[in-house]
Amino acid sequence: MRRLMVLLLACALLLPAGCGNREAAATTQDGFRLYYPYAVEEAGDYAGELGALGYETEPDIGTEPDVAALLERYLEGPQSPELASPFPAGLTVESFRTEDGCMTLVLSREIQSLFGMDRTMAAACLVYTLTQLTDVERVFLDAGNGGLSDGLLATELTREDFLLFDDSFTSDQVALRVYFADAEDRYLVAESRKGSFSSDQEMVSYLVRQLMDGPTEEGAERALPEGMVLLGVELSGGVCTVNFSEAFLTNRPKTHAGARMAVFSLVNTLTELTQVETVRILCVGRTVGNYGGLNLSEPLHREEDALGAMGLPSSGYDATLYVPCGGGLGAVPLYIRRTTGRSLEADLLSALVAFPATNGYENPFPEGTVAAEVAVEDGLCRVTFNSAFAQCDADPAQATLAVRSVVATLCGLSHIDRVQLDQSQAPLTSVDISEPIAPEESWFLP
Image (tube, rainbow, N blue to C red; front, side, top):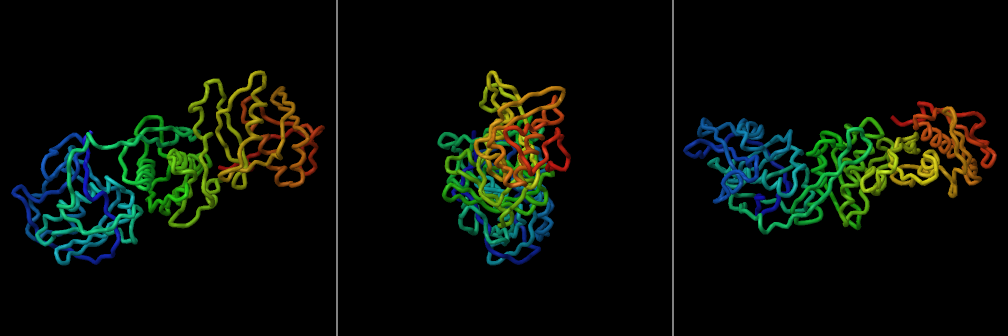
């Protein structure tokens, strides 16, 4: 596949700028050209200076155009279906000025969602378009916030800074995997991507941007909140730090299930890279605490359970565990392996007792806890734990969470509506388990 290559791989957006509104225009015979990439990479003329860029014209721009109106029109995107806008939705020019042949554009923060080749293409289109103005020889792009995350130096750009050619026979493509949510917000769905990158940081930025763009295949849905901007990424010592705009919090999912998918869509995608062991999520540079029940104050580990039956035998069971987190019980879908000769209820309790206390989830069961006997009759499930279970009685809050977790998980099965915990081997005094218990709505996270 053909694609655009440039000598300048990306432009950082660093310095402040003033305002302006008029420049003289130098137009071609067919009018002032608005440059955009072709909608299909293979389309267009790859010979000569234009490379993969196409254009449409504004024939009546005049010799002294209203540049503010021209820029607004340009960022609206092309009218021709053969061309595509290289700019992210919502991008605006906040101010501009021209001095000594250099036009400085202060762009809105949406430009920060572009990385690598996509940002270079956007820069090339802006430079090719604006250097048609008689007084503009160079263009400086500014995000107005002290710079972007890829570490490249900002510079004044000219047309000569962009070298366009077909590198389809020399490009090294890296195969990547990204994860989105399924339609029920139960498990992650994998999609494949390929790209060429000059650094690990650029690769991470690309993956995050793919998650923000959303899936390309049916059966998958975007998990990250809408309206987010990626403010920066950093990779150090196996920890990948991702900094999002305020929308990560203000537009966060309303349910624990949605929050779980949003978080592990990101974490499981980035931990596909061997360079990434854990992921730290920041919002406008600040630590995030409770996020739909999940604890984001510490680096997050990969959740293999969020992948569901991916790579597991089809003989398992799609269950839901109710695990303490964030002050309530969070629903955690889990594809459990079945054990020959053991009941579903026993397998479910084994998975619950073994659930790892990580990423904000708690395990209230004392070490060595085992469900010794499990029996079901007429909607009532009787459970006898071994003596280790009684150790949670030392902490009434822990004992309450353990009991509620067992009751809610078992009552998630359609044939069980209440649970009786047998006190003969593991008596509790801090929680009343003398009668069968049914789950209450107040136990659960939204």
